[in-house]
Picture 1 (cartoon, rainbow, N blue to C red):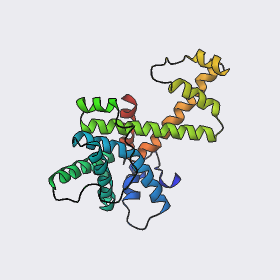
Picture 2 (cartoon, rainbow, N blue to C red):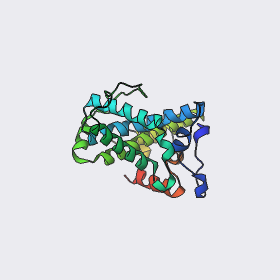
Picture 3 (tube, one colour):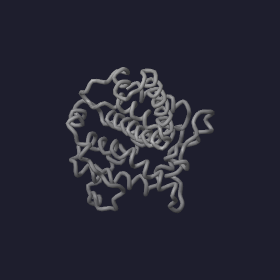
Picture 4 (tube, rainbow, N blue to C red):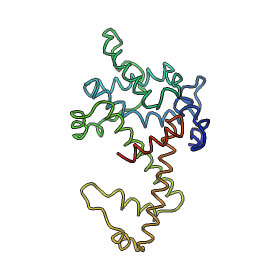
Length: 247
């Protein structure tokens, strides 16, 4: 989406504020640019927020769904995103701070409107989120750690979807097939060797390596573009890249 991309590299002036804060926090009538940014914002953050609520608030599934809806309504209708400043650090740290305050306020206010009574901000399908792995994580990880893990997962999954779309549009189906077969093999299945792929796809091992190198480089570029929407400087972008790929 060209309208909300953040320029990469260069001086701090290329990162005056995050896309989320600048586009979603700006007052004025609804626009196609804002709607597109909002869809991306909710897609990226609702699962981390939901998991944070379930972990920090020890909420039931239904209460967590209601609180997640309430939080995004509170965030957007209260124009809280416009309060983000670059000196406050990373945007997701700022977002978690608002979320902690919201949950504390919700727990204190026993006379508040019954949860779930307002307009739904997004559709929540939590069945795929409520896994045995998540249950185990809640026993050993903090709400902040769970939020950050899910955020990283969302960044990677959405970037891989971008990669599939990009390579398909460019007519590079062979490159995509090599990447998917090698990097995205099902859990529990042995990763194929370059030789295995070459024989299966009627390629040379050199071609396999070239396709993998090209796909990995494009994926890194796509990840950078997604991360850049939530940082305020090249230094923060480098930190996010290092943390994402060192985990």
